Length: 316
Image 1 (cartoon, rainbow, N blue to C red):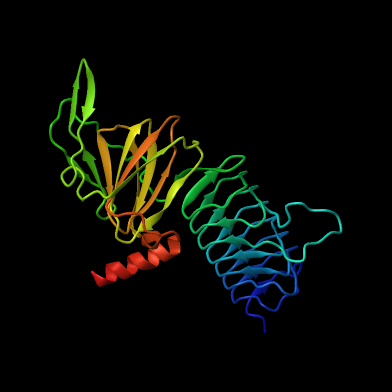
Image 2: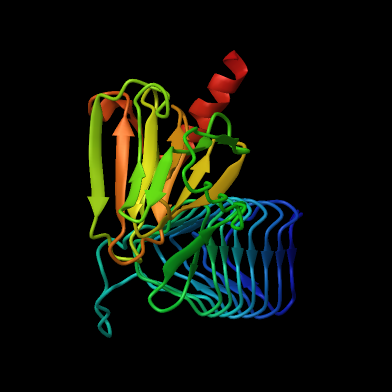
């Protein structure tokens, strides 16, 4: 006996359907498709042969899932969301192999969104209704518009802005963030009619010995930088002009801050996932680092970072 539900007006040709999955009226599942457990396949959904779907996936009405799609657990796909698997389609011309479109665990795709072929939608990402996604989306990103652009990150305190330092202060105040080890630091400032000065003393205001520095500038507003963590390297970020937003993440908590004053520095210890985005026109970001450049010190995959952060937490 089948251990899943298939409506009498649905056509399910596949035998690879997980338990407790529900397939509703006028849905069509082709013979080689794989659908996991506890999924909800709504009316008028079409699932082609080379589709692999995980558990607890919801596919709302009017969605077509074409060859070359991998959908992980707990994904939500809204009504009439459209996926493509050929960038240059022609009638009666078929690709030998379709590009992989992957939707990672927990991602949500809003109604009427369009996803171009071969893209990777990261875990927990949120794609807004009607968005046209032309590039891969990183984990936790909120994407809206045409073309889609990142406007925020899921789970951040987006109202977390620092307080301005008092004019003429000669000490550095430290604000602890919710993310483990990350601090905002007010740098000493002197202001008078001649202009303003910010002092930055290494191993005092910057809590480590600096071995490397670099400057980020001329970043188009829609571009996202960072998206990595360091195993051993500390970083200290100061926005010298303009502003940018920084997302910090320790694997358990995620927070967003705005850097818009050269008198504010953000200290990111090792094993902090960092993202910089929303650069204003003319923004210039200074980054001080505790180590020389070492490609082996980078963790560039968010899933790998989460695993490493969990291991570090267990060891401590």
